[in-house]
Length: 212
Image 1 (tube, one colour):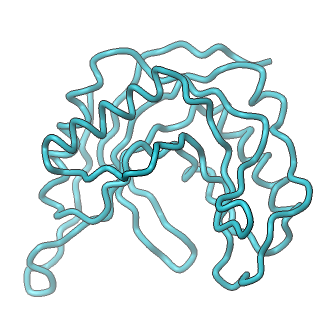
Image 2: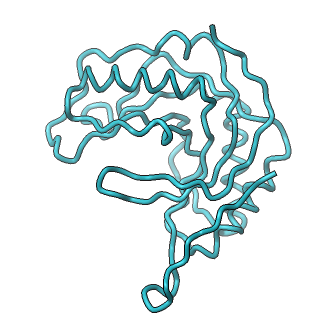
């Protein structure tokens, strides 16, 4: 079951073909999001003022970054995502280390995930379905499951990763989490960072192997 929120149109005299910056992502269960926020704060403390943390409500696992599409394509993209979600859910298992990317001169820091079969299969199904509908062009590089925690500020020109990065809080590595939903998001680029607007959300089945 999915719900599509209205996409705000713009006056025709300003823009005849309004476009939206879109991506499909897995939403995190609340317990994982809270613990990731703690890890995020520890990372910022270790790296100083160079990092811009993502807001707690912006933490997610991107499955397909679609980029700019006409607003009229939103319903077709939502239908394509819905078409592949009849099976099971997606399991999230966090690694114990933070990953700077690129390694030598990072632009972001992420919490990597284990490439578990159901997660990778779901991602492949979403990418394949949207590609077949000519709504998405997949990247050539291999899919890397992760949650971006912080981005390096553009003003930090000589930033390098700290010698020691904080390890994952114990609750993240004691079990697995079930992703709560797959969501089609619109990304609004703003001076303080991107703001994400949920356009369509699809609940996923699954049980959480709850950490202590």
